[in-house]
Length: 153
Image (cartoon, helix red, strand yellow):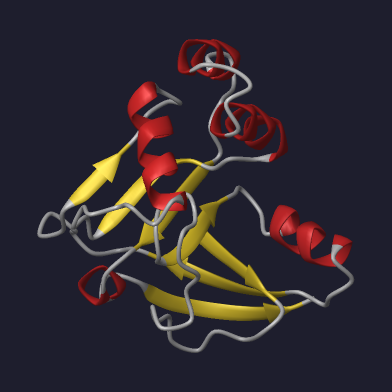
């Protein structure tokens, strides 16, 4: 089960409202949690009521071009750097990998600012267990999403 947390209701996922220059490039971002509690708590911290959209991918997505990162790695770091700088020229329909949570984000920012080198950054990230993030980056990828329900919190 994948969750999308927002303060607005998502009836049909699309790419036109996506922000550019984020970790996995412009796309509809979903996070995998065992419950929607983490999504809601993040929204509550920002002083907003939460709307959690549950999306389940039940289809065979072998027709998609997918990039998957199983761990934080040099390739993951390079990919994020290119995406954040607006230099992602890849044509992946979907990107799957670790999200830059607070602890990971701090290390990534130190690297991006040139305060630590890539080897040091990867060394710091080596022991972090990635929280799964999935970016649906094309309209083709979004056809594999099935909206299962919306909960207001």
